[in-house]
Amino acid sequence: MQVDTKILKLSWSRLKQDCKYRGFIKNPLELKIVCKDYEIWIAEIKRKLKKNIYVPGTNRIIDVPKQNGAIRPGSFLRLSDLMIYNYLVGKYLKNIKKSLSWSSGSVVFSHLIATTNSAKWLYNPFNSWSSFRNESIKILSEGYSYVLFTDITAFYENINIKILISDLLDLGCSGHEKNLLSQCLNKWSSYGIGIPQGFASSDILSNVYLDDIDRKFTDLGYKFVRYGDDYRVFCKDKTETKKAQQDLIKLLRLRGLNLQNEKTKINRSKESIVEIEGESQIIKSVKEQLAFSNVEETYSNDYFVGDVFDSKNYDELNGAAFVRDIFDAYFIDNSTNFDKTLFRFCLQLFARAKDDHALSTCLSFLKIYPEQTEYILKYLTSIKLDENHFDHILKYFSSKDAIYNYQKYQIVDWINNNFDLNIKQFFLKEVKKIISDSNAPCYLRTVSRLLVSEIGHSSDLDTLCNLFSDDMPVLEKCELILCLSRMEKTKRNSFLGNVKNDSFLISASIKMAKNIDN
Image 1 (cartoon, rainbow, N blue to C red):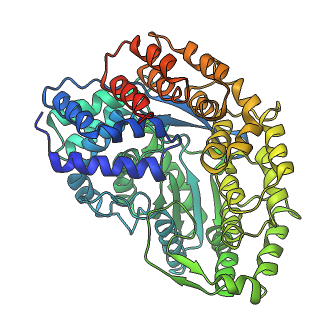
Image 2: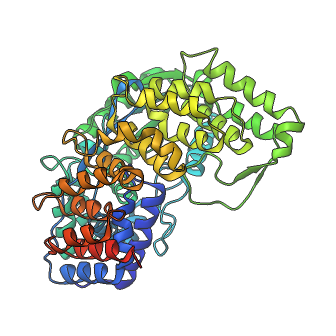
Image 3: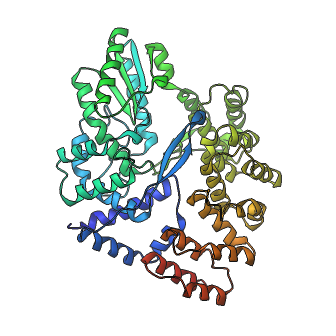
């Protein structure tokens, strides 16, 4: 395979974007190792690509909590696999962008390709969602009486890789790159079905997979818009709406997909406007009250992308009371209709103003809405917490109610990255139970070991050392090596001298561990 050095370089920049803003698991140790000896690492990847001998690793599945107790199968790929994934999709990017241009920004609004030659390859998701909403309202104003709202059941998990590769062939994507992409996706899937969730490359391929359906549905004469796996179909009467639903079901079945019955509904136009607008009118009124102004767009998952507000207005224009009243009305007084967009919006306002009004609610929501943990923790980072608050989090963390390992990972990772040794000491006893628990997922063990390695006693470091085994995965070996930095120098170096140094990552880890003394 001939390697395109420019695209490979872009793939590295895109990988770092994914690690920072995307993905369910942040893997700081692996990234740290690779960044330390990047040239050696990338040279080895290029060598394997040129010789067509690259072998993908496994896709470690993460059970990520969703609303109402559901679970999303997130993906955790090693960095070399993510690099290769970005490279292969990057090679096809111009073809994909050209093929999808007919619907981008007019029919399809999710995961739109912004550019083919920079690290930021997708448009900002918040702006894209706003365009999706605005286009929906615009179409309704054209005289449609009914709207079919629906989405696809477990979309990413049910993408047929053989069909996807055939779609890419139709776009002119062939050769060794196509074969390697097929090999990777099949290795990361279950029996040739499903693509990894949490990465920009998968988002792009998801649009490729649905493009055939979008074209055929358009050819049938339907007016619709799509964001990800969410469809909104606009019809003149109820009969047409029911027929549209049947036709969409038939098209999806040809690709192994199905609609979610519980999320499928037919609304009249007035009901549809309320459904489409959601809480956006409330958010708009808050922005007007707090005098927001537009600034240059940045790559972020935050709701406030492109917006800033005058913090003086929060205090002087009764903004604090205004936002607090909204929060109380929707999340304290009314607990039946939880709106995640409004919740996150309020939390980010409170965070920017360092307002602790939502503190007690957020602590209780860790149990009630575990899927909101990321946003709750971001908010908690911005305000002052005392020992009682950390005690509440610790009691929940160690209780039988904390059933999601991914949420535990989020909490330990949050503690690792945001607090001093005193707070970490607060969690040490519970976290030590995880470091050698074979039933705990690898990503939870990793962040737990990091905490223990930083503040644990010498006996805890001995425990980490004794966990090392030649049979364990390379990445786990590397993590344990780096966790021994505080071990007594002679003892540590004696141990490292007996480690089988049989890979770049192991070698780099040993070198980093020894250089800590310098």
